[in-house]
Length: 586
Image (cartoon, rainbow, N blue to C red; front, side, top):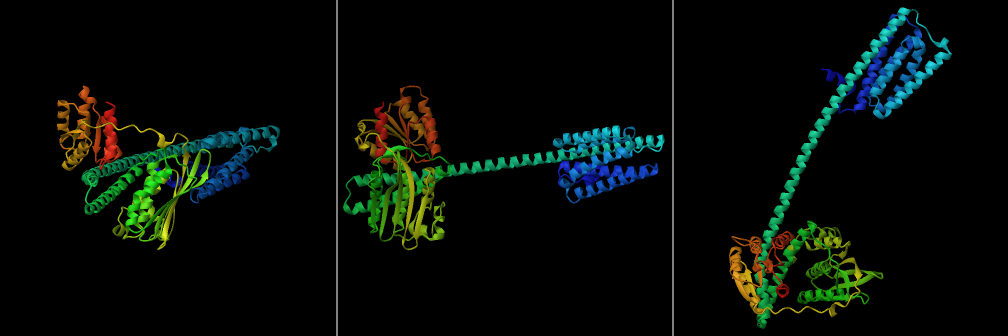
């Protein structure tokens, strides 16, 4: 009941601030106090001017309460109310007997009430103003005692002192009660807000857990699908490579090239999905190492030219004469960007030509900025689709994937890779006339020795090198055995991790090729068991030869104790180089 009365007088916590509600309480108490004072002055027949002044005070504070509580004009009546209160107390000083009457008590009560209701940073100012007013009226009374209107009798004086004391203490009691109620209301509201914050935090934690679980599920799915697709693809690519090296008949050669082209396309699609996932996770790092830029561009265009010639397209490369022969940068990412752009240009061009160019646009002593352009005479891109094509899984037309293939990830990956290298990509295109993609990359100019003059470490002969192949997929066993046997190595095979551990315990090997996902005991556990043997055999080099291509799998392999990591489908030259290097260190 008391709380309802308080809310009806001062306002609910949701309607106004704590200071606002306290000030409303102060105004209504002042209005009530002065209204009661006017009745008291009339009863004991004090000076008519005093009666009129007290009525004016009651009317003002009633009006101020109304506009503050119900019209929301709190900030407009605060200072006038403070000033009018000080002025009223000063005037009452002379109308109520001065130092011998109730005014000193009224000043004291007024100061206590103002300090209680005024916001903390203004309380000192309010107390100072009242103190100054009190000093001024005392001084004025000292020099002009004739200004004081005396009480008509001692009885009236005592009655005024008693009434002022009672009203003053009642006002203080009401103010203290209102402050307490407001404090409790504010604390309840604060407690409810804290509870809401706790619930919100719990909701955020739950949402974070769900997001992390979804991310782990996506990673697990990508890892599984990568492994399941790469495992048979490794056999297709590897066997095609071997057949192409076995001098096939002319009629077989064309079929094998088509098979290799299809397998390479499938591998590109798979790598696009995995690269996009790595970029999304922020796990792609940009390198800065020397490489021959014109040579890299020539090799890249040469690798795509057969596809262009099959479609009757002319594929040209134009490298400006002032392009530095060797620069410092990330050749892998640059190749990936240009491969995406040139492959798309060839894919979407039915007749005409594709032109690749590299031209310096700014040059300094230490570096150079080079603009790369890929121009085609293909189908073109509508204006309203020239931003859409850079979104993941987006195509310019709904039938593009069906007609031309692809995942719609190539350009999304291209833009994000360029952003990682602090660049951007521009496109100019007209439907039916072709497209031009361009970007500018900064490079440092390499001033070291010529890369072609650096001596290459000779590959060690693998003849009679004893290698253990731990692999459960039979086509990959056949493929790896053929490559290793062709290089002169002696190959022993274990069909799972448990058998691999047993073979290492029973015999010494120069190197182990370890698959990761196998039945019974996987490659991680097998590697840890071999490293834990504690003898000479525990230090054998172990190369992870796996279809798992995610960075997380590579890190797990390193922690397990594997020496190197090669993904399937593997590059035979890369595998030979890794085996040679590790065996040479023994």
